[in-house]
Length: 178
Image (tube, rainbow, N blue to C red; front, side, top):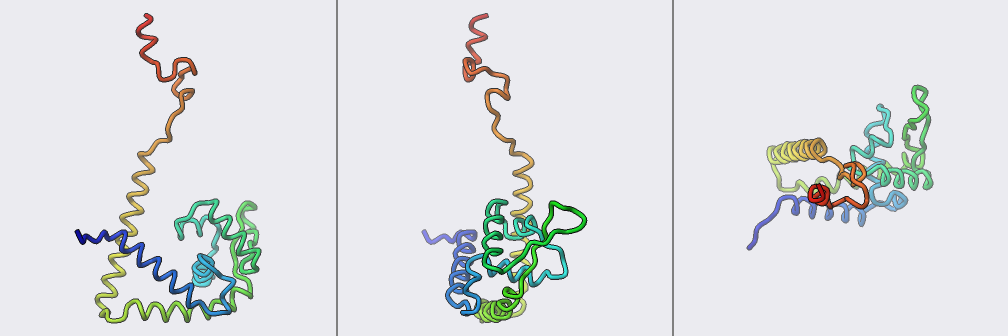
């Protein structure tokens, strides 16, 4: 059976693009490995907006612990700084450093070349249709995730149900002893 599952095909393409970008990454950007390059480009494109760790978590669909670890490493490499904001002492705005600024132009050039390779042979209409389809799929999965979270309740332990360790799982024992 030669059935193509769209989600698997998309994941495969995404991994192939990431691998290609990694292999063709300019020497100047070698310190921006893995997801660092994506985050640097995102921060560059959003310089006019305050970006915080939770923004990175949402944009890149990663957990709080993963974002914290990635951003800490980027800070250690000198690619970002976290600046306090006056309106909330808990928040730290993520800002690119001059070192990261030097990397941005090379990353953009490599990304643009890869983009041209990806859409080679596609008409402008096909490219726009693809963008719209991807946007719709992202909306669909985001809605499905919200729906799942609304209906998924955390599993309850015996103590939360009011059971004692001796009776948990033996609710029929009480009835039988009456």
